[in-house]
Length: 303
Image (cartoon, rainbow, N blue to C red; front, side, top):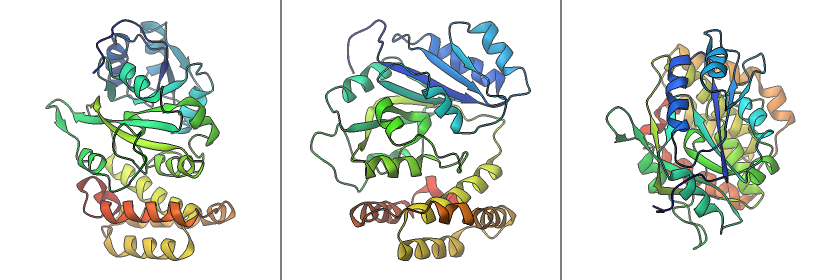
């Protein structure tokens, strides 16, 4: 880790939140104390628990956006419109960056102009254990150029990633159709299609203290729905059919899965209108990741 200290003006932190006032205030307090002193932009997705008022009162130096409705992941797009730094670090209201890691992420990105993003190691609090997704990132089966700072990735986790602002904007940000839940996969695909690279950087650390207010069933419905939509937006016909069939056979046979498939089917008209399959080289990378993820404990919610 770099030994330099003091403020660093290369990275802005973007946080989206919805009805998690106390957890958000804890996270913002931790971000305020980072040695890098990053600018912070908070998009409040129409909270009804006094979140916006508390942020305005307790963190007046931070930029607060109040779109008036729940934009989901698109709240990040709104915030990035305000970003004036070369890099943007995404953060959820229940995650925060370890001191010095934003500086180190910028140090990794600065000399690598085709590197779009670096994803950090995630520690689950309060115990400080590795998130189950970390081995999947560390042992990524994808290959990449020698200049990458770590294993090449095919996707990323928004709450643990620093992105190049230019790359995020060039790829269009998060797709409004997906709203929230695995929305990173489509953006990562489009970044790679434009020639950008993604990498895991285990020397970076993000802490995650899962919100007590999260609805795990709703998250599974959205995650499975968006997996299906991504499949039909970007996978060629054969792989799309095989992936859909695999999910039908392997997801839990319960009401949540039924809702996910019903929502995915209802969205097929717009999905098929926007369908734009990737070229063979990128499809091979997606297929490689799909095979590797089938045994990952972090992916069981989508089969």
